[in-house]
Amino acid sequence: RFWGTDFHGEWQGHRQLEAFEHAVESLGSRVTADIEDGCADTYYQLHILASDLPAVGHASYRLQASSGTRRAVAQGSVRAGADWVENDLVRVQLLPDGTFDLQDKTGGVLYPGLNRLVDEADVGDEYDFAPSVLPEILTSDGLTGRVRLVVESPWLARLELRAVWSLPESILPDRDTRSPTVADNAICLRLTVRHGSPTVEVDLIIENRVRDHRLRAALPTGIISETVLSDGHFMLSDRPVIQPERPEWVQPPSGTWPQQDFSLIQDGSKGLVIFNRGLPEIQATPDAAGAVTVWLTLLRAVGWLSRDDFATRKHANAGPMVPTPEAQCLGPQHFRYAVAAFTGPAVEAGVPRLSSAYHVPVPAVQGVADGQVPGGDGFLEVDSVNTRVTAIKKHDHRESLVVRLYNMTDSPVEETLTVGRAIVEAWRIDLLEERIEPVPNSGNRLVIDLRGHEIVTLELALESHA
Image (tube, rainbow, N blue to C red; front, side, top):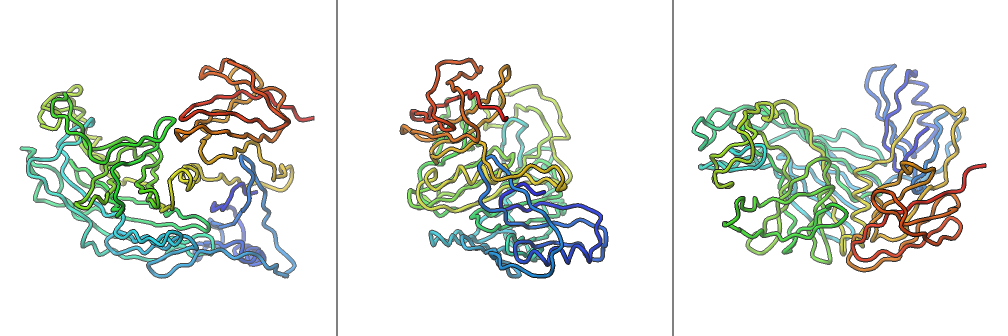
């Protein structure tokens, strides 16, 4: 049983290879299987299109042998070559130096040279980055990695690059410059494009064998903008690309900004968004024409909790001066992020929903036919693209449902919630889940007004199953 939309999951089982291949063949073009060579008992990965899944709902799929008659089914849109993959929305070409060119087919815009790796000395501590006195910035320019197509199906295709990058082993004892001795760092980069999605997924593994450095991915957007928009705490944070210098501050601005799930650059007609999984720091810098490059921090490898010998923090400690050798992050480091182009303003273009699809992929569960719960019904759905649901949970003390959502814009929004069961009663509640006031409802629908940037938490008492 597979629960998922545009599902790409794994089916693990002890099956004879011949029987499995026959079953997959009977399903036609709705399924593609990646099968390990030379194994009768192995792992199989199925790429299944599970379209039109209900909101907060599930669907069940059954893999079985057929009589041999194949039905005509829809074909996926993913195509691939030796160093490129595409669907109807986007085309990506991966270059030997690890950068890739993204062609937005909807907007007709090319974004070349994305994902340039940039490495520099870091003489800071776990709190703050600090450049060395004699900085040496190295890039992935000139790498000659091997690019190959590792997965190809109508629903998903994946390119892989493997390369070795030589970097200085550490900073020198004077902490002013980097060592002339270098170490080789193995790189494995994978790009994935899926059917029906504009998102290009990046999966990067680096065998870190060097110390005292910061590693970032540079993504030149080519878009002229004075602000960068980042996902924040119950709001989208609009910040200036050029930070104020503020030399009089105890700790002057670092140049970087925090983010949660994504950051983006837009000019009203087009934009480029960078999603991340657990990479909370970005920087945005303009070139001479004002076109912005986004810098995504991947790794900071340092050896001290705090130090008081670098100028960017005015030679002040931020904590105890304790060595932390494990903060050098030696060994394999795994980074996951993604890039998508969009047309028009970000919220109206559905960027927050693209982010949710990337960060919370539909789960897939393997099961058996006996006792399965039929799918097809949704549990909760909202109408507006301007609101974002952040919590759906059982009340801590009552047999009711708690739903929290917020308005991402500064304009009022009338939001309609549709629930999979009839609503008996509904209330606005506070963040402690205490009731404030009742909310009118009709059947399984509830209409709520949200002011600009307002957070609303609702408690719903639902009709029980018979």
